[in-house]
Amino acid sequence: MDKGGKEGLKVLISRIRGYADELGLDLSKPEDRFRWFLASMLFAKRISAEIAMRTYRRFEEEGLTTPEAILEAGWDRLVEVLDSGGYVRYDFSTASNLLEAMRKLVDEYGDLERLHEASANPKDLERRLMEFKGIGPTGVNIFLRELRGIWTKADPEPSGIALEVALRLEIQDVKQNESALVRIGLEYCKKRRCGRCPFDGYCKKL
Image (cartoon, rainbow, N blue to C red; front, side):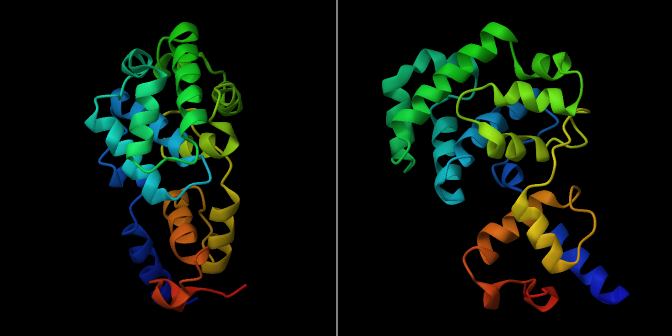
């Protein structure tokens, strides 16, 4: 790819918003980092990004954006909120996982910021997050990739989908562009919407 092509590709990628940004979260704020943790748990299931975002917004509308509020809400109310967002396939298990995760967070760390402080390095941070019920490797990557440059220990290995899209577009700095690459992969590559993809002219069909 020539220099002009690379510059054009760079501009296009800079226009792709990450999901945290689209949800209106300011990840420089601790309270919004928790909200992104909550959203990441919703995104981590095999469910569409649209449903995950809509369901997260329902949590915001109901004021369920702190560990304490989620714990106080209880299982029945969480199921109702999940269902109202369209999160019906995993409503029961996700409600249970959320309650267990929030209790663990409050009891063992107090909040996410103390969890980060207690972590020795990026791998230890990932290990601690993996101990929360319902987040798993996918959720950990979703959560931490948005926090690169904000949390000093947030530096996960790029996801498979980000690496695949980077290969297609011949992008070297995968970590810096991971949020955009994942979104391109989910919204265009996985759905085979090549003709509608703004990156089609740059893509090496694999």
